[in-house]
Amino acid sequence: MFKQLQNLNNISNIYSNKFMIKVVGIGLNGKESLATKTKTIVEQATLLIGSDRHLTYFPNHSGNKMVIKNFFEDIKNLQEIKNNHEYIVILVSGDPLFFGLGRLLLEQFDIEELEFYPHLSSIQLGFSRVKIPWHDAIIISGHGRHLDELISSLRQGQEKIAILTDSKNNPQAIAELFLSLKIPINYDIWVCENLGNIDEKVNCFTPQILASLTNYQFSALNIVILLRKKDLHLSQKELENLPIFGVEDNYFLSFKDRPGLMTKKEVRMIILGELGLKSQQIIWDIGAGTGSVSIEIARLCPNSQIYAIEKTAMGINLINKNSKRFKVNNITSIQAQAPNKLQTLPNPNRIFLGGSGGNLIDILDICQDKLAKNGIIIIALATIENLGISLNWIKKNSWNYQLLNINISGSLSVGNLTRLAPLNPIFLVKIFKKNKKIPRT
Image 1 (cartoon, rainbow, N blue to C red):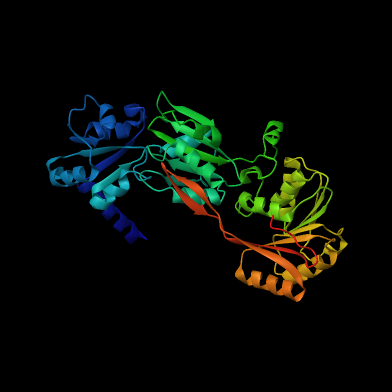
Image 2: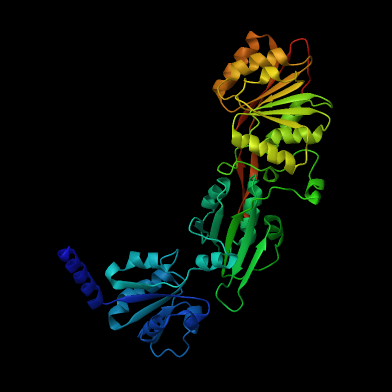
């Protein structure tokens, strides 16, 4: 143990005797943001390096100054002249080792040549302003980068996301990106400008409002914090403004850990059309998940009765919450692993089978027995194997069918550009009795 301590002391002595470049983090309020010890370090510098803004904090500095304009060129020059100066200090914003200049300096200089004096990072300051713990936040840098990591985090429904922005990946662009993803969750978006300065601004926006501020110029020194909302209710105005059908996915409450696990709006609209719904029908929604299809049917056909069968308790909870959220009262949720409990339900006029849990044949056998005259079954299938099982069952039981292969891509904002993002391909199989000819709907 004593030998280890002695080795540590030797390392400390090497560091203290060797030439060092001091890398000092500083806030927007300049010299006042520095502790007394750190301020002394800066004042003793024979060469003070930083951006124009950083150097203006020390107008009366007695040593030489060097403005960083092109990092790699300036660092190359510093390598050549460093031995001509006794005491070099580089000024940077916030914490130099948090998405800062520190990483690049470590690539260009020996670790023994550098010493770091961090200030509070903009992310720390931002979360303190919105009064939210940030130990579990996802931190993403948008400086000159694609926002693929942000897209992934949004699709995962992360609770807290902080983004270091730039002129391209600005607050409005981030809001537009979120809206283009059409994710079934909502976020409050906080824009924090000039943190630590006298003109600091911290404002909260909905994605829709922020995306609409196309002509508003935020300060160049800003960060964005997204906080996932926990809305349980829709206002009367929101309900009145909903379309008759084709409700956007973000209006539905969804699985916290898998917000994208629901039948997407574009696919729901096709399903609703293929079902050929009429008033005063009995409809089964098997494998109902969040209840998005049941909700759409309930809103379209308030005089019909929908039975939403879902095997998971979490799914049943979401179906019930979404029913209250959309103020529909004609959905009965049933927790069961189909085909269990199907025999006890009223004979359906329409069946939507969105999930079978591996029991596809057994479910179809009961659906065949229970389906009312002139009834229709719609099966949604994600795999070729289940499509094959379905078609074999259809032929064996002498039913008619129509098959749709749905491949949909939607636009996705990427800065000032747009690309297409595909939904997972899906097969829709419409099944009906052979004595009934149904035209394409």
